[in-house]
Length: 182
Image (tube, rainbow, N blue to C red; front, side):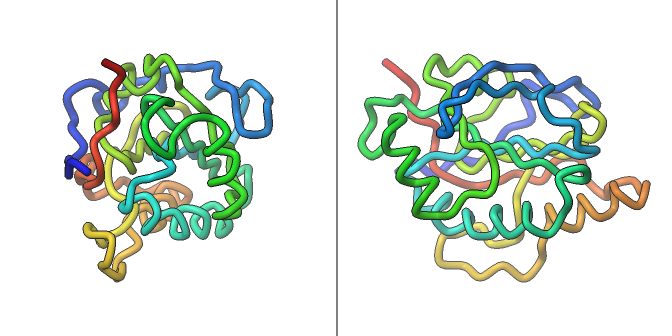
């Protein structure tokens, strides 16, 4: 595990969401533009990271608090599929074990992670009307054993749905580094 903070170096605020066509654990192909929700959260996650395992319940709960027309979460796994506990079959198991209520997609070429500038898991990107409005943490719990007290992403989604501006457009997430192919 290499602890890494998300970086604002690639995708800048107000940038259009890079589109993708990726296979989901449901064996369907998904793209960013398949979803017509007002707000879309693209979050880079994986199967083995203790930071993801600690926050995955919070991400599932977040999706459950909003109608699909309001918020759509999309999970993308860009880790090297040959890395321990990664790969499509393990993603299917992870999805079932954690009762994911959002698409979980494999980016086995790692091109989508590069186009977004994702560097860690979890690495969340929040879009309103297809434009980046926030890149950062799900909540204020930055270590796996920490208990969240501030639901950062939920607060941001609620502000956006009310037509309000966000206080910050970047608040780095902390997690394991993405496992890049050699």
